[in-house]
Amino acid sequence: MMSDTKRNLAAPCGLYCGACMIYRANKRGESETIDQMKKQVAKRMDQLDETGHIPGMPPPAEGFDLSQLKKEVEEGQEYMCCEGCLSEVVALPCRICGFRSCAQKKGITNCSKCPDMPCKWVIDFKNDGIPHHADVVNSLERQKEIGIDAWIAEQEAKWRCAHCGCQLAWYDAKCPDCGAAQKQTYGTSPF
Image (cartoon, rainbow, N blue to C red; front, top):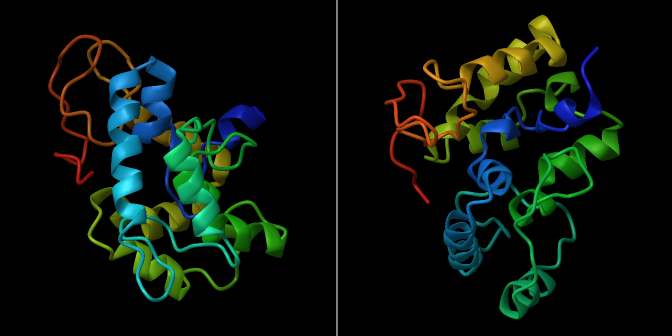
């Protein structure tokens, strides 16, 4: 049986948090990468559209307080620590996530368990132009087919360097440990 720590890496929307750039940077202790991600999140928060959506981020949860989040950013509070979307320690982009709150309201952990999958939110997220978001519908369908635990095991294997076994992030073109080129990544980060 898989541990809850690993299950926390199966984001409700179908993303695998174990390959998230924020998650991996925290696990590797890459403060420079975390600082870059903080700047990108702060910049994206200024691009809030009329629907309350922040480009490149999941749809916002009902009633999220953008002013409080901006205050945290301005005050320099640590908002980029994360142990996976289903954990208690969640980075800012996932704290405001509508997928997460919707699943909680429905009493499920993942959108793959929702009878409305794929909903408009999932489809829009899939088509928002962020390369790693494009796989969410396939991932959710795969979760339904084989179960969350087996899907997580597949993702763990997929996001490992074939040369040294190092865990990779979605946009690691080279292994951070051995420097080997990686084929399974999404190329250049859009962030």
